[in-house]
Amino acid sequence: MTVLVLCNVGNSDLTVEGVARDELPRQARPLAARLNAERETYWDRIRLPILTKALDYILAQGEPIKTVILFVSDQDRELAGEDEWAKDTCELGKLVKEKLLKQYEMQGWSSRQIRLQAILGNPADYDTMLTYFEAGLPRIRSYYDPASLKVYLSLTGGTPAMNAMLLVVGNEVFGPQTVNLYDARERKQPFPLGVGRRLASRALRVALLANLQTYQYAAALALLQTEGSVLVDAHSTRRVLLALLTFARDRLAFNFADAAQALDAALPHAAGPVKDRLLHWQNQVLNPTDTDRLRELYFSAEIKRLNHAYAGWLERVFRFQESALRHAAVNRGVAFRDPNLEYLAQDWVEAQPGLVDYLARAPRLGGGVGLDPCRSASRPLLRAVLDFLAEQRDDDRLRSFLALADRLESLASLRNHWVHRNQGVQLADLEESFGDSLEAACQTLTDMFQVLTDVEPGPNPYDAINAQCRDLIEGGG
Image (cartoon, rainbow, N blue to C red; front, side):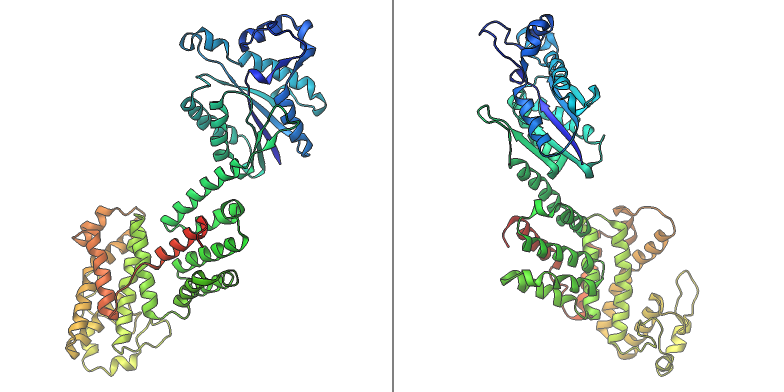
């Protein structure tokens, strides 16, 4: 564990024992100049009451300190004015550093382990201090391994603006491994503040909720696995949330068996409406039918669209069209010779009068005519078989379905072209290919599903899953 201590330095960080009321200047710059000029008189009487208590407290935890960083002010004399400039602690900080090295010489600290960092703006201005720490603290963090870094913030010396912004930004940058120390003069040691945990929790919750909003379940799950105790206090609630995020991740990846199994871990920790919802969602992925799988493809495409992941949306549309054609074929009695529905059963083909001749005249992608029913049941082959059945059986519903499927053909062709060109897909590419808006293309998917299955796709189940996750995170159950 690497221990880092960050301290704001103010006038109260250095005192001198046994001096009369007006013997020494009160402002930091003239005070430092006087102490340097009369070292023999004052050096041994210098005390560091705030820093000594903070460092002693940290060392008492059995944690060797790697680095102490002292934030000191050093304003422009002309811009700040003489009185404010005289209050700057940059010269006082040098004395503090020298005194710490002497006082803790048994720790073996080198001069490089106690660093001064200058604040060039007004240390009493909250905006200035916010900007300063937002720029400086990430740079400090970059010098260390975050996984093994523990940071103590001493929040007593310096101005209120320095301490407030070090507290806010420090906890945001360094996260849950931050310990916020506050000292009161009457106490013999500082005490840790709980506000840091609450600040860290808020920042992490914002990140987790953002992941949910964009359906990034793997990222949300990784965050919860790493920072679970900070995000959610109750162990049982964390178990339910972990299981639900795992379920959503696997379901969205069409890994239905693992998704259903994931919720088994949550059920013993859930009750009431929460348990009812878990059981409902689990039932949706147990032994899914072809209609269930097609519905999942539909919602997966919708999520890609909402996230502006147009290449992913295009891939889902291609899969949806092919799966829908296969679904329609099965519903119309087309027989396949393998469980994966990849090849037509030749005895069924030969039993359909005129089908072989019809396929021999059917157009091929890329030009030419003739489709071989012995080859893999591709989209053109399935399309031709269904067109034949629609004419033979005078099936207007099937004709409507095929007309909708044909509207997606230009997008399917774009997908095949895109796969081989290693380039991104933009919204303009999709709308130019489809000949209409992306919303119209999505409506075509909806219409295809409804014509094929006689039901609407319904609401996106992932939105309900997200709502339940938000309730668990925010304590609503």
